[in-house]
Image (cartoon, rainbow, N blue to C red; front, top):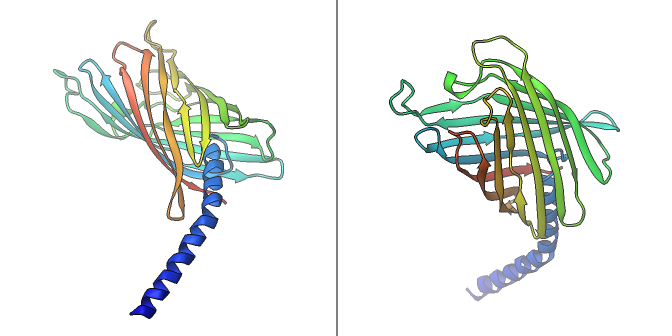
Length: 271
C-alpha cells in the first residue's frame, strides 16, 4: 500500500509541475484567441451559437427568440488573398398576435445569410475585407422570412492596437427576384469595441443597427446600446468563447422589442 501511495504522490507532483509549466502557454493562447474571435475575418475556423432573447416584442409585448448559428470558414486563395466565408442560420421562435389567425407561436428556420469577404492574406495594422452578402429564402414558414432573394455589398474594417479590437461591419442588400412578399432594401451596421484584460477575459460592445428602407417613416431604424463580458477558455483541448451581453433599443419601430439578452458559445478550431 505504501508503494502505491508513493507512486500516487510522484504522479501528483508531475501533474502539478506540468500544469505550472503549461498554464502560461494556455493563458497566452486564450488571450490570442480572444482577439482572433473578435475579428470577423480572422483566419480561424469557428462555429458560434448566439442566442438572442428579444423582450416586449410585437403588439402583445412577448418574447421573440432567435438562435443564430454562424459558422466561419476561411479559405486561402493564394499568397495574396483569402476568402472568409461566413453564414448565418437563424432558428426563430416568433410569438403570435392575439385575436388573429397567427395567434400561435411559430418555431422554425428563418432566411439564411451568406457573407464572403475577400481580405489580404497578410493584413497590416488596418484589417479589412469586402465582398457580397446574399439573403437566401430558406424560411420554414411564411411568418419567418421573405420569399425574395436579396444581395448587396458587405464591408468590414478593424484594427487591434494593444488590448483593443475596434472596428465595424456594414452591409446593404436589395431584392433581385419577384415574389408576393414585400420588397427588400435593408442596411446593417455593427460597430464593435472590445477590450481584452488577459487570460481570455474581455468586455465588449457590438450593437447591431438596422434600417429597413421600405418601412414607413419613423419605423425604419433599430438602434441598440449596451454591451457585455466574455471569456475564452479551454474545455479539455477544445477552445471556446463564452459571452453574455444586454442591449436596449433606444430607437425602434412601434412593435420592435425593448431590449435584448444575448448569450453565445463559440467553438474555435485554430490551426
